[in-house]
Length: 80
Image (tube, rainbow, N blue to C red; front, side, top):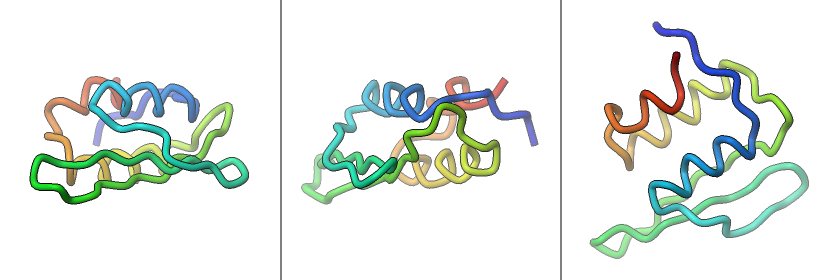
């Protein structure tokens, strides 16, 4: 498995905004991002807004986001 980049929560949020997600809500340090697909279904991701997100958490966010966004499009943003 390739090594994940060192990303902050704000870095991840801006990556996902590039793919059409918008910040929907924030509770504490966690941000809910959502986009509506072409079929009308809601796609939601929760991102911790930390200065540096753990590598395991980055992998988890990548895995969740790849349900909605093709892995080959996400990969260069998340991994070295």
